[in-house]
Image (cartoon, rainbow, N blue to C red):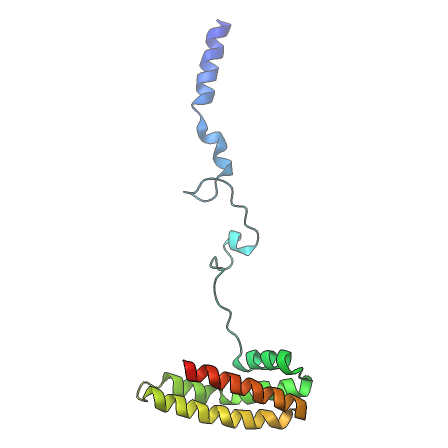
Length: 144
């Protein structure tokens, strides 16, 4: 009688697979979700490859800050100049009525104006480095 009761209990125990469901994440995926943070709780985006929107002037100021060792005033000046001209550069690039060469010429005109304004903030040595960077930039633009 005891062995019969033991076999019945063993069969019932094996037929109850629901005991492992506590380790499942969600309704259809198996295993444990080991990610950490608010994405798991559903409070934030799950796409980790989203691009953060960067301030146009900030990006330029950081780049030139690294290349030319800008101080605080120069950094703020470069950032301000680039942000002032961002809208006109964007309008030209989005304008579908312009021929590509016209776009390029207008953008170069604006960039030359920007260069003149930026050079006013730089020391002589920084201005020389900036001119070299500008020449490099133009050389790359010509090959594209």
